[in-house]
Length: 96
Image (tube, rainbow, N blue to C red):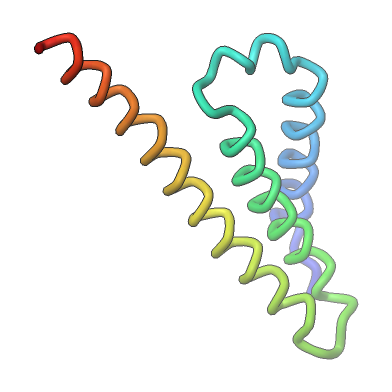
């Protein structure tokens, strides 16, 4: 059954991706912004798949949805590690 909240969240996620792409210069100040964008794009793809799985009688789109969510969290973890480990390396270098 198609749920309204899933459609609204998927539309919102798609709009945020468009905003991010149109305002690349302002987002460029975020460290490792490309990895963060990839994580968010995968997450948004998973949200869109959750809307589309209503029209699929097999579990293919459901599998893609969970794959997107899992990969999104992996890329978010990589982004966090790269961003915060780099900050701690700078602090260590300054204290020497």
